Length: 393
Image 1 (cartoon, one colour):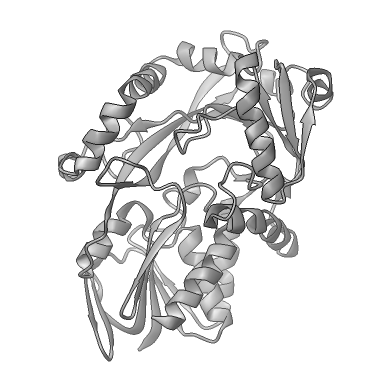
Image 2 (cartoon, rainbow, N blue to C red):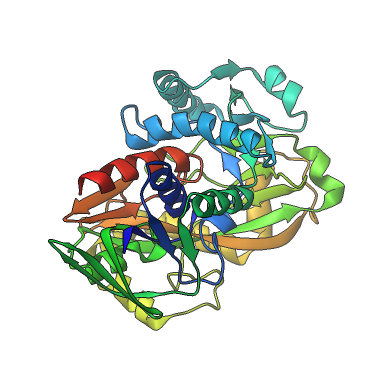
């Protein structure tokens, strides 16, 4: 009997399993896909976030800031490609400067190495950027998260754990003497069950007998890449001032570990939990979140924003126009499509998005119900927190 079964072999599930393995627990990771890191972990832009954006005192602030250091150190220790290149957050209009200043104050409160920059100072690192003011953040970087996951699997297995792919969970029965996890490959028994299933996490919680107060709503983030002829226009990472009412950072430009430049993402409601294109439609998924009153309440508040995002999704020229606010020199033919990602966003009944990392604990169970960005950055830190919770469940 495994001491712990972890559902989900994304970076959070693997980091949690690794931490439990280090503590001497026997761990089995169960993943329904044919390989690890197939969803959120494998579809992001590889950024190590600094902790700049997050409310002081929140889990995101504490774990994100610590994670920027621990992820960097982990990558260097195990020979994973990493580059702490820094980034700019730029105000392109004067009316954005107060929000930029609030970001500066938040970064200071979170212990982030952030500096105010004039346009001339910003141009020293990004000659093609357009701004009226900027913040420079030296601790932001890029890393190969798929490589991190491969190393985590090796460490789990060398510590006596197992990572099983092509195994889907179809039932969870928790009793006083342990947990029985029914899968498509038979039953597994454990002392503790940890749910790190990302896009399917709320469904798995309901399957395990819980009634979570949130519903996962999938938002697709669409990306482009700059053609190789234009990658010289971006040296590091360039972000806009984000909308403080939304948990998305806005369309931005990021160098990638392979030398390319990622552009995006936008944020549109996906038509399937794992819907990476407009053509990916799963009616059962759509019905699931259409029945959730929080989605309708969110829509009433942000329908204009949603319409803007859909228009940008359907028009590469609108997408390019957003990027030109940051780098006006981008030519008409700068972009080529890149694979999209899907964000698992927890949404409450009242229509508010859960802004922080969130998990719930039950008898012999821990369920991670909200782990969006910067979860990859903070994965090793989240793993420690969830391992603590698993040992107390």
